Length: 199
Image (cartoon, rainbow, N blue to C red):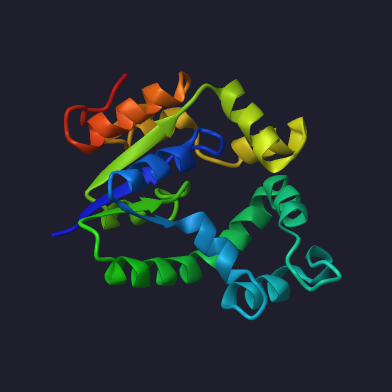
């Protein structure tokens, strides 16, 4: 029987780093954000759906989706973000379902920032939340995505608050210290020596 871990956390919390450590421990990581990117490449279902729903202004002269421009727009307009999610979520879930079924690993990690919003808590056996201080998350987003303060704030503001997510978590991984400390927490939680939510 497969062990299913749902991995969530606000943008900039360090979820991708935790996912990479879990891969080192033998887990098969299914990354919802990467799937969302893949299905929005030309010729795929998400590409056609976003083009139809949002128009040509979010596509470059090369025909590709301008993710930064679309991101800036939807994160500043909550209703438009909701509309984008309604377009993409069913397509992402369909692909995730296929990948879970095809996986040969004993442990599958569903890496999804919007785990609760997408209703995926029923898919998994345990939910892991990666947390970090607000300022740390904001600075990581700015550096990672090359965006300014306003866009970073909008991105964090569009997501569920960390305190709210704590109510869903079986395991809490704190990411405000060193990488070695983060890796230690991941290992302890994976092997069952630290599987209670922390305050």
